[in-house]
Image (cartoon, rainbow, N blue to C red; front, side, top):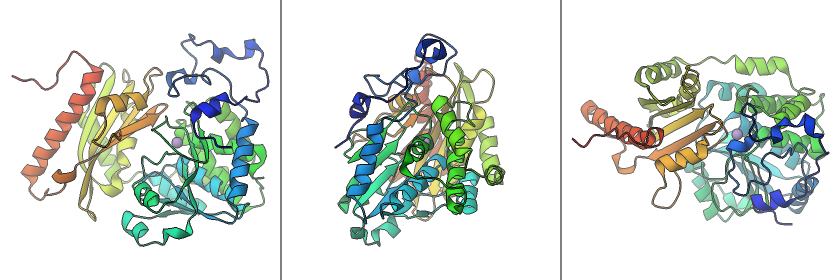
Length: 425
Ligand SMILES: [Mn+2]
């Protein structure tokens, strides 16, 4: 059975036990305090919104099982976004372990870097089997050994490697993600659930449904469960934005995970350079209509993750519900520059995906500069011809000022529609 779109998923009968009405306040959509996914109606028809899809549709599991069976003994690439986060890393690992049972060998790859100190700690401390393949490395590989690829916690739009994978004719076998639909996608199996807070929740549901029997005596099962717990926590703001299904998934993982190991991962300290970027975001921020907007200037490629960390921090200021932090990230090896930005919001009615698409629009190939999921979003704007030549500091400063004004202008148009931040006189 082909399951290509969200619509198909929505039409599947869901095996949810009937929940007595008094136990389900979430269903009342005008309750202002509830945290239902009603602010992310990204699927258009909204059929699953407000419903309690706590249990997995059993057809979904059957379809995944059938997909694995069909691809037994093959080799696959698991492609993560260029800068993978704990949710992506842990979910990919769970996928790899599930696939292994069908003698499907998976290589988990990402093109960018692990820049958040917690991600580095996660990979090192758990021995998480993810590998960096830059565009250069990928070009030198024999891709013909891969009979398919899986996109986990992304839909291919945030990986530089997708074009090479497509050129090599590797079909997309599996897509599992919780970001809003990013466009047409052809995959044999897809499970796209924008209403779920973490991809790790979806994978935990697969495990719980019997796709892999976790065993406390198997070291890498314990480590994978710990990684999933970390992924789930980090995509739900330490469970504060978690919903029932995330808590249920965390409850299941609590039987297997290693709390000391998780604690060690969370103790990873911020580097001085990350602290400096946070300081710049505090200095440069402007607050309008409860939006806090901060440009942080230039930063090194390896410190890219300082941007979302700064956004996480400045959104905590009182009277601020949404923070946007951006800067120019410079990759010295490849002489590339790209404007990178992160959005964080606590406003339930603000859809980060819509907001970013509306603010920045599309490139000339119709690709959006960014997107998002519940509570968070990001964007990347390549600087192309204007990349580099920053040895001249006056020139570098001028270039930053132009980008800074342009981004502010685009954001403020939405934040404060009647204001024009760039005065013509
Ligand atoms: Mn995620």
